[in-house]
Length: 418
Image (cartoon, rainbow, N blue to C red):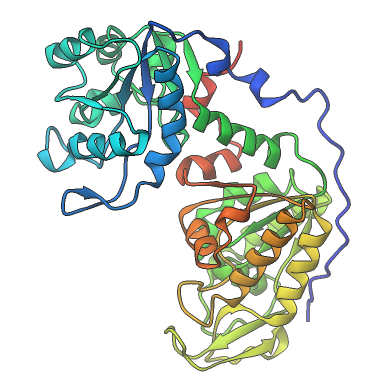
């Protein structure tokens, strides 16, 4: 029986020649916006309920950049997409979002019913210094996602500078997320800057040792992530259904648990790469097992050598939780993406909630820098009531994941100081 050994985490050497993030990217500190028409790309893709914004979190995140530019006398011209429309569609209009945004920033937000052409040009021409204007959904034009040069040129006519404050869309090379950065002077907004600063602390030039907690259902969706992280972190905790695939690869019987058994060779390759990179892989040593995938299903903790053949692993067990806590205690920086178990159902949220609360306590005690991101991760931290206690929680989803995979993001690369 193979049993993973929890190693004390030996910190890697810091990368030589690293610079502060603010020196790598142009930000609002590098430009005087007074009197300028500022094309500001933001994320206004908010949840709606009966035509009203039901969650203003994303609006609150972009508010500081909007108000700063406005207060400094810039003419704020908001660019954003909403939904996945196939052409113009009233249900995907940004007009109700603009109205909700006005309440968040406590300033009037005008609205133009197109993002190019006469409606946009006329609205922009009527702006005074400090005014805020929201242009209609950029995805009403198919040229947005195609990054069409003619469309980019039409947008560029409306502004003097371009500010990207939508990290969540930075992995897309679209007209408003990347194309404008080649036509106008380009800068990172405060939300983008905060995200880049957090990610630099996580993986760029972090305080050592660094631990990553990676969970979720499938290894197949996170192969690139795992292969990148083992060369960057000192220890990697693998949880959720992903851990079952790794356990199966090591000859552990996982019963009827979710596991991608055909990816056993991939799991072994990742473990070999981790060993070569001196990255400790931390897998469960026990598991919480049930016979039905349902909330409050009867469950029991088993050692790895005793997983019932007809049972399903739905969470880590108490010994595994203690090992994750010990790994967090050893770390100076934590990067987290994905839950340790079926956190959406009690009692199978115990492992994730316990680890999240432990990390939060270490963070509040100033003993840990904690960076987390991904939809399920944010939901889990909210469920544990600790999202506000982490150093930084990214709501960027796909862009956060691609950054962690080591992939260049078009909307970020265009902001780099050359």
